[in-house]
Amino acid sequence: MPPTSSNSRIKPVRVRFAPSPTGTTHLGSARTALYNYLLAQQTSGQFILRFEDTDRKRLVPEAEKDLIDSLKWLGLQWDEGPDIGGPFAPYRQSERKEIYQQHAEELINKGHAFYCFCTREELEAVRKEQIKNQQQPQYAGPCRNYNKDEAKARVAAGEEYVVRFKMPKEGSITGHDRLRGEITVQNSTLDDSVLLKSDGHALYHLAAMVDDHLMGITHVFRGEEWLPSLPLHAHIYRAFGWQEPEWVHLSVFLKPSGKGKMSKRDTEQMKLTGKSIFVKDLEAMGYLPEGVLNWMALMGWSYDDHTEFFTLQDLIEKFTIGKLNPKAAAIDYKKLDHFNGLHIRNLSVAELSERIRPYFEVEGYSVSTEQIAQITPIIQVRMTTLNDAPAVAGFFFQDDITPQPEDLIAKKTTAAESATAAKRAYEVLKSLADINRESTEPQMRSLADDLGLKAGQLFSILRVAVTGQKVSPPLFESMEIIGRETSIARLEQAIKMLEELANNDV
Ligand code: GLU
Image (cartoon, rainbow, N blue to C red; front, side, top):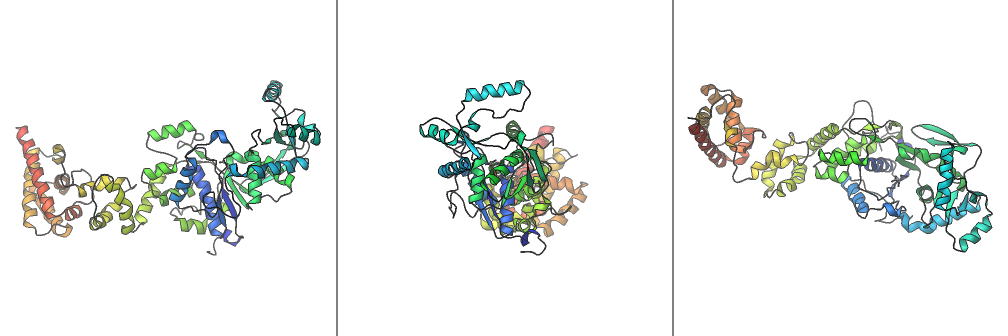
């Protein structure tokens, strides 16, 4: 561990990423997983994956797989989890129902929770009344004061119930968030929250606290939306007599405009503009995991005021909780493009070649290792995403290209003038034994002079003729890769097209 990292001096942490499998893995979740992973790696601790699936109605069948695939793609491997097991298995809350029931009972026995038999209708009526009287809606039914043994007898007789936390009516509680400091609230403002539902499944408030304790979690990274629950959670820990973990509530993401939080609707609309907050979409758009990680890490954390390029290893070494920013950050896709470009350029040619190869193959091009090794260095500087590869360089793999005839006409020339220039260029190419930048570029520059053209005008004719594109990797390097014969044949085809255009002009 580097001596510069303050966290490296703390003892190994046990941290967990505890998503509810209720949708597609998005940036917020992935960033929480990342910070967990970094701290675990940095302190040689453990990173645990736990599925919080007690809200059975909200489950989405593919969500677990999407979470696993997304984390794996990002390279954030966990040490214990539902798929690999571990000393505190099971790591899926739906398989831990009895554990929560036992703990609910423990709280009841200690006088910190109670069985509640109120019906939905009764609760709703009280709630309406409280709202009408401008009171904070809170549990106000009789069950809190029932005799414990009588309540247990009703449960044993099969009556439907939930278990609620028995919130003290007096006093206050102070919770501690690592980023915001102490948070004190009056207990009178807190509700007798439900811990166990009538279907026997625990709610998050109970399940997560029990699991975090039993699994030895030392630091809880979770979204800022859980901050209002911190007092209740502190109460639950203390009611059990447990030592609280360090709570770290991470800032939320704002819309790219900076105005307001991202809603589900915003997410859908964003997709129409070709952007997405979902990890698998970013993969499909050709972003590198390295670029996404770098981008995400800096949405809520910084190392100093200028360093921006981080590999995962850099982040492991440099991450500190103290540098997390509690302020909400706007999602900035320009930065994602920027970081992705940096990481594309940071790859070795061999590595980038292997990563772009499938993008050509999916277009039906057959790609030889030799060819791709030649192409990669000249397109590496021009790519923002891997998806750019076929658009920038697909022409290398095409047997025939068909330029748009009009594109062959250089700016400020007629078709006839461009045809003449192309024919002269053809003669020069024919006279050269090899086509490459050293041999060809000076010849073409002096030809442009002879023709009274700017080099750019002549090059644009050659570029469209040989690559079929108005924008391409460097022209003469491209011609070298395409080969002398093919380059000449393509120029010949272009001359015919230009002559036809010129004939049509008269
Ligand atoms: N299941 C909770 C969520 O997805 C986890 C919050 C936490 O990490 O404690 O929001």
